[in-house]
Length: 356
Image 1 (spheres, rainbow, N blue to C red):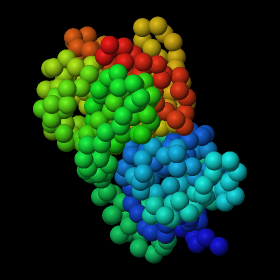
Image 2 (image 1 turned 90 degrees about the horizontal axis):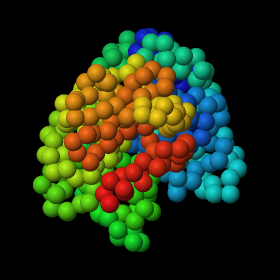
Image 3 (image 1 turned 60 degrees about the vertical axis):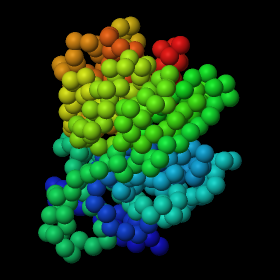
């Protein structure tokens, strides 16, 4: 029988559940995702670095563990919270169960917990810190630890250590993918469109990237506060001055905007899930998108050399920017989404056209 475990919130509220996965205490930033499918992509998305993730869909693990669906080799989240875990998955591609996967990856889990009530707290009061623990005997010191927690060194912790090269069949274009915590499917989408992709660490300088002589530059998703990445922002200023076709996704979208003088803000509880509406400001068309971010570019801060291309259909926040004086554009959502809607995959074709 799984042992009793507790989730202590920053506001002092305590939830009781049962532990699975690795048995270890951990502190992190509590967030929720509304996706009904794609829990493997969620677990392996580097953008969840430093966070404790709640799945709002009640049954998780029903199709098991499928390594070919992973977005990275190692989960970056601090802990995983579900209502019900499935111990007997059914899928012809299944290669394991969720409990064993979490144990192997040293990620603690919590189940048999009221995820609906927990999510409503985050939605009403905003993202807050929390601690997964197996005792509430030291509540005062636990709360001090919780309140002092901060996500630090996010991008540095998830980027590749050295450049990696991925070859396409046609070699039609050379793309440098700046890895701020890139999901694997960004690279896959580029390779299948004939791009040879060089994935480089986030700390790579503009001169090093230019020495590769790329036809295009891809700026990936990633975790953390975008404004903290001052060195990366300075290098992006140098790169954009060269007018190389550039496409940014999620954190890449935010960093590109910051390099052009825009600003970012933290959202109350972010956008995380596979059902976020993004409205094309030119056509009025609504796309259902996959998203995972806690920060947004401030609409009013967009510089004169750019325009907002997409806005969120729920709260009107910036979901995309097109630049008018250089061949560059970016989106806040995930057009490469494997576990969610692929309605906006055409943006990769737009990037190819930009390079052509």
